[in-house]
Amino acid sequence: MCFVIKTLSHSLRENKKPALLTLLFIVGEVFFEVLIPFYTADMVNMIKAGTALGNVTRLGALLVGMAVLSLIFGAAGARTCADASTGFARNLRRDMFVRVQDFSFENIDRFSSASLVTRMTTDVTNVQMSFMMLIRVAIRAPLMFLFAITMAFIMGGKLALTFVVVVPVLAAGLIFIAKNAMPAFRSVFRRYDKLNESIEENVRAMRVVKGFAREEYEKRKFGAAADSICRDFTKAERIVAVNSPLMQLCMYFNMLFILTVGARLVVSSRGAVIDVGQIAAMLTYGMQVLISLMMLSMIYVMLTISAESAKRISEVLSEEPSMVSPAEPVLQVADGSIDFENVSFRYSADAQSDALADVDLHIPSGSTVGILGGTGSSKTTLVQLIPRLYDVTQGSVKVGGVDVREYDLEVLRNAVSMVLQKNELFSGTVRENLRWGNPDADDEELVYACRLAQADEFVRALPDGYDTYIEQGGSNVSGGQKQRLCIARALLKKPKILILDDSTSAVDTRTDALIRAGFRTYIPETTKIIIAQRVASVQDADMILIMDNGRIADRGTHDQLLARSEIYREIYQQQTNGGGGHA
Image (cartoon, rainbow, N blue to C red; front, top):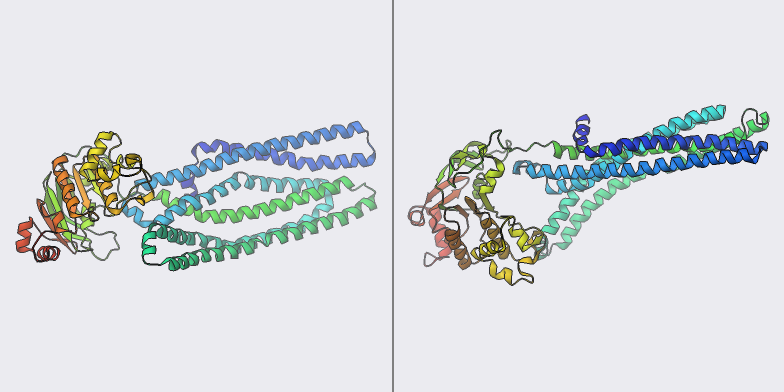
């Protein structure tokens, strides 16, 4: 737990000052709050004794002054506490988000996206609430308890013995409540991950859900996740709910004891041992003691809940990126040549087999390479090693004659443009999405890139043209339109290597051919790697690779493979109805 606290404390930064000021303000607030009953008792006794009005007025003015000071300290403490806790939460979320941006695919694979969302939202909120209670309530409650107990024994004498009975009973009850509620609270966070995962999957795949008429199934799935959270919270809340009746029991016992025993002492000693003012003060101090104990129990509950959240946040913040730039990185990519030398790769040390095995491949700069292969043949895995999204398990991948592990990561990835199999557009205008490829591109460059990607015509037909707003995930454009916008975005980058991972599957063959023709005129010196399902998309490539079960089964030009590769010939004949025409 010390490591977790140390990890999270780095996010405190500029909020240390308001946190410390909160502690000072709370001490001042409690000090005056505890003094008020003491002087109130004196006022009651003075009034009973028939003292002069001037004395009562002076003491009343003193009480008002202490109440105002207590209010000022309390208000100041509340403000600095809010500043510190919300600032701390903001830093935590920012630090987590920045950390995730540095993660490699291997790191991201360890956390589900739903879990990361829960950690940046629910978990951070829990830690924020816990931190707020620590710097405010966790200081106030113990101080109030100690001050109130001390003043009670000073003023009440034997009457203070009530706390010898009440405090242990209440403390034992609260510890029992907190201890039994904790297991249920801990399990909630794992269930939150499942709930968020259910929501995320449903929203992302809404078209699939409706296409298969699976709405009722999704409702049941979500309901099961929500019910499990409800059960755990209900169990915990039922236990915590015992707090209130236990508090009431101790409070009424305390009042009954003080009033009964105190009244007898007042009558029997005629005010010599204890007077009416002291009884009133004892009632107030008793309430302060009991409330302090209840606050401490709630702090314990909250800290235990947030301990699990803190641990989950710490896991993200302490996760070391599996890929980092070397100490003295290469800062320039000479050209787009690519060399795979005896490359083998597996996604994790626990994997039972290699995803890629014994890959030797040499691609000259500026050439066009097509990749064909069945589902699961590791076509995507192969190209993901080029921009170092994963590191090879064995061998090396070189770009521009340099091992990719020797490059600065940003320099390498700026030289490689990937249009992924799963195209992603972001919330914003068409223009803003395109400028992901080149933030400095002017409107003329945007339009030219869209023309090459066969996107300009449909963009101009949109309601606001290039200023049309793209919804999250590009849900308001078709699959083919999304692919063409992503290709235009990649072209704007003017990379040394362009990788298209089945990125024209949603466009017709004529548009596909026009896009490839645009590549030849716009980026002739760029190395182009095209993963495709259609032979027509790669048959004019300088080299075509046939992938099978993580290996390069064959390579060559269209004519060479047609003559000697059974796999290629079978794909070609299936798509051209026996070779009578191109697909």
